[in-house]
Length: 165
View 1 (cartoon, helix red, strand yellow):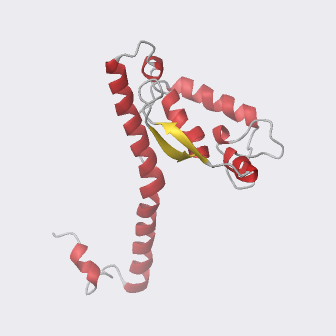
View 2 (cartoon, one colour):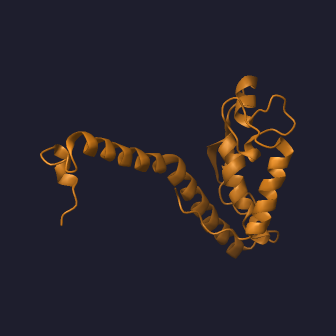
View 3 (tube, helix red, strand yellow):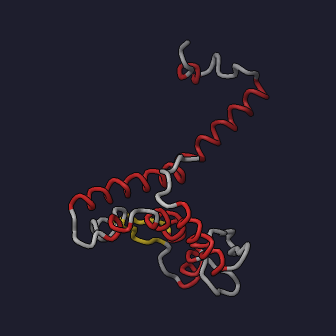
């Protein structure tokens, strides 16, 4: 649902994704339903994701994600392991290499990494935290319109939120 920033190098992203898929096998899926190749453990039998493996071992299922890239800032945010590996790390792999690695400690690249990391994390939060609400609200409106009519909110407490025309 969220509009993600354009990829820096779509071809490299495709190669990384194809390589990850090849490592875990075509149509690989964990018992929990996880299918993102980067979240699955290569050569696990049966196919297992990192979250399920850690749960089985009694370990935390959260990682500390270096939002702005480790080379640019020590700041981390706790993130579910599968999302960390399959979404946020993948997003950072698409950054320009010098921004991600910042080999000379450039303050300008650190600032660029801060902005890139913020954008990536906001997109992640929108997708995980808000997108389902939009789908639920639209489904609820369709349900109410079908049951009560196209202007179902008139005469309810929700009428105050209707757009003014």
